[in-house]
Image (cartoon, rainbow, N blue to C red; front, side):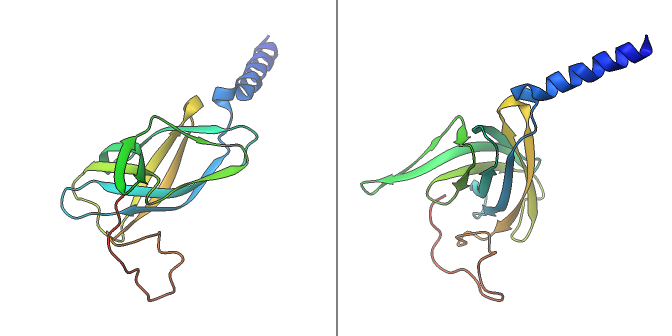
Length: 166
């Protein structure tokens, strides 16, 4: 009798794992970084997402214990007019990448918790996908003038330039 119950539970477990909502996420992330702006201005988070799966993955939200509010945003510049809008979700096509980058899609981070993040800190951000999967990603905090996560700059050099909009 016990063996039959165990076999039944194992079968239900295999069935649950085969359902889309229970499948292990095929999305990985790297090069996460935050452009920290002065004062209480919102920061922007950028990251490279990789979907190695056979189906598209949908990023539906993000959260962090260091920020009270994390939103998905899109920056654009049309005919010299810069704008930013919140988006509900981002699709990462099967076997492709999606780069959240300055001037494009990004995470808008506001309501920083005390102590406020500072340049050099690592901030964990949870990326939430359809089906209930989450991915914990470390983001390095960079200064306002940074243009990337710093991994491509030669050792001992600093990024230069003006602070572009998030």
